[in-house]
Length: 348
Image 1 (cartoon, rainbow, N blue to C red):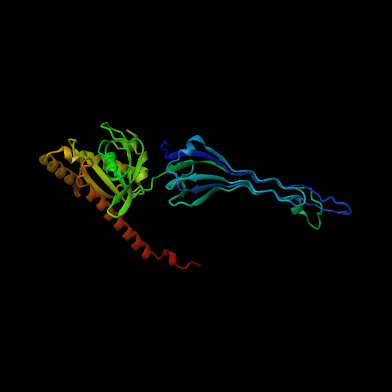
Image 2 (image 1 turned 60 degrees about the vertical axis):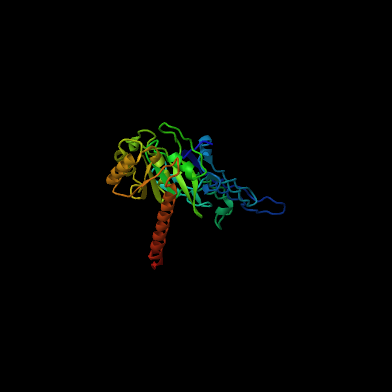
C-alpha cells in the first residue's frame, strides 16, 4: 500500500429541505387550515479518527465529499427527514487545515475523536409555521438553507515516541530494521528511504514506537533533495536519535547540516532532546573512531555514542537512553499538570 501523508479534499454540507405549502382537506371539515410540514436538515461533514488506518491513501482516489440534502416537508404536518452525514475516516495523527494550508481546524491524536467541519443547512418552514390569528391560511413556505462548502487539507503526522534523523545513508533504515520487526528498503545509495516508516522497539520489558524519515541534505528547507516535508512526522516525538555516518570524512559538517535544517524547519525540532550517535564504527579502526568521536563532540558539545547498526554494538544502550528521556518527559508533563491551576480559577 502506498504511503500518502497529505491530501486536498473538497467538502460540502447538505442543503436543507424546503418547507411545504399544504392545506387539510377532509370530508365534513369545512376549514381544515394549513398543514404543510418543515423541511429536513441537511447532512453535516464529519471527520472521525479510527483505528486500522496508517495512511491517507483513500483520499488519493476520492477527493469530493458531499453530505445528503434534507427531504422536503409534506402535507399533514410531516417534517422531512434529515440528510445523511458525510463521514471522513482518518488515521491517528491527522491534522485538518483550511485551504491556505496554515490555519489548523482540528488535530486528531486519539481513536474515537470526531469533529464537525461543516454543518448542514436548516430546513425551511412549512406554511403551518406561519399560521396566526390574523393570517389563518398562509400561502408561503421557506426554502431550505444552502450548505457550506470549501476545500481542506489533510496532513498525517505519525505518532511515534522517538524519531531517526540524519543525512542519506547514515544508517537509519539499518538501525530501524535492527531494533524492530520493520523491514525497510536498505541499499548502498542515497535516498533509499522515500517514505517514513514505523517500528515498535522492545527494550527489556518495555516498548516504544520509532519513526524513520527520509534523509535530509543541505538546503532541504528550500526544497533540495526530498525537502523537509517529512520532518512533520517527528514533530510529535519526545526524543530524536541523530545518526552520523562514521565513514564519511567530515562528521562535524554532517552534524551541523542536519541541525541547521532542523532549525530552518522550526516546529520545535531543534529544541527536542537529542541522542547523538556515531554510526558504522564497524568499518573504522580504533584511531579513526576516536578521532571522529572527538570531532563530533567538539562540534556538538554533547555526549557522542559510538554504535554499529549492522553488528548491533552499543545499540541496546541507545534504546534504554531513549526510555530514560521518555520517562523524564512524562515526569515533567505530570508535574506541570499538577501545578497548573488555570482550570481551578473561578470565572464569573
